[in-house]
Length: 167
Image (tube, rainbow, N blue to C red; front, side, top):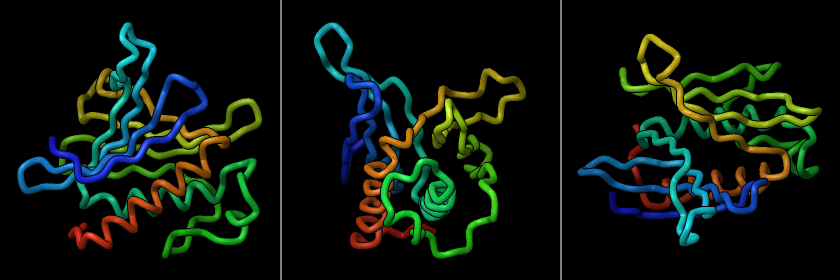
């Protein structure tokens, strides 16, 4: 899968990194969120968790991240308290968001309260009838939120600048 763009962020667990990747498969473009772990034998990074969404879902994913992010506590910076990056009105409470991928899988975004802090949880669920279709989630903590939001905004701007058709 040829990559067009990649950016990486450190997570709360030092050997782990979160990668945001734009790639192409055939004539379609995809955005991948991937957590890699370098605790392996040769310190090479192995993907631990991966979430891939078609570019057509990017605008909805971006809006969901921005809306849910407005409910993160504690907020990382005063700038995020006054403004939101989304273009539509966010709900008054942080409702979980489910994005559908044409009968392939669902992407669930929700806020999880853990020990007084809020984490953004992103996970995929396959249409399988049992719970084994659920993959390990990607968690964005309050300490990583600012860097994650900046990377998502940069990715959104890049898709616009390159003229990628999202719909």
